[in-house]
Image 1: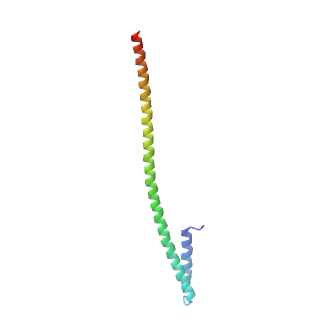
Image 2: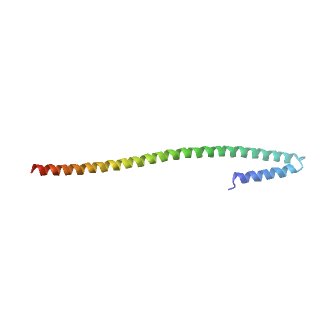
Image 3: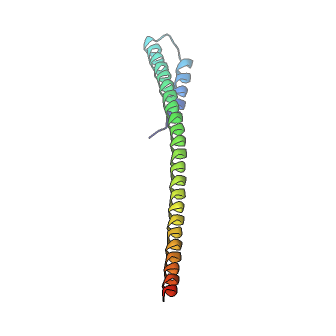
Length: 107
């Protein structure tokens, strides 16, 4: 599949060749006008596609930033969860130690 820039170059080349021909033939003039109209239409479509591409790239950048924020938040939450679990384990160990001490004192 040819890219739009390749098509545009070929169309421009064809137009320049046709402009150098004798313009007395009405069919050549019509063909030249048709090719010129097609070229203009392709340029309009190219600009529209470029604008859409730029918008998509901006949207992609924004979504990537949001996703990065979400991932950082999840990592932070996971760290907090691990720290909390460790604190609970420490408290459980201290509780066991205190219960052992109480048992010793009661004897």
